[in-house]
Image 1 (cartoon, rainbow, N blue to C red):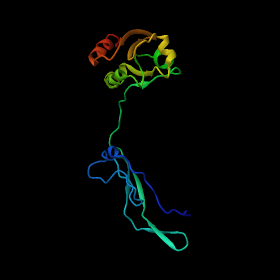
Image 2: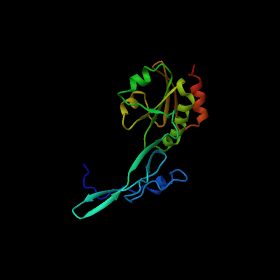
Image 3: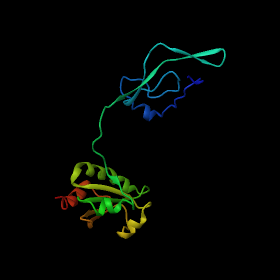
Image 4: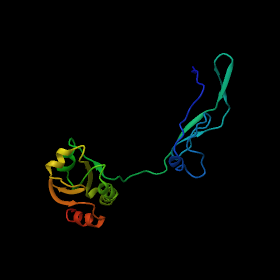
Length: 186
């Protein structure tokens, strides 16, 4: 049974998102009811077919054409950046880890913390299965920061075998963190 549908509104996306559409494809999203967005990844495409008349009200009819959602796997992201640790997961992810763990103590309002965040993510990718990289927001989980004597952020701590082994304070270059990490990687 068909319900009384008169319009389909698709919100218009910002210019920054619209610019991400694949070359050669249509606009990412529009407000027109008859055009569905066409994007990479999960693509929604409009297939031209014979229109179907659906009665809306007593005297009027509207035509709708069929649409299909097509899954287009363009890329598979296999490597991820640093994970997040909380008070609830601290013991299992950090203290009981079989491999060395880098923990970045940070806060969202901290400029230097935001500067080293991409470096921590790069290290997580580069060291793959040899090192676990985690981030903990000191505003959300102050008890852990207090327990380990964090007085300045960003602070990066290296844990191995459930014990704190090394600390690097401040926004430092990637090379400094890599040299420090290499001491604890088997």
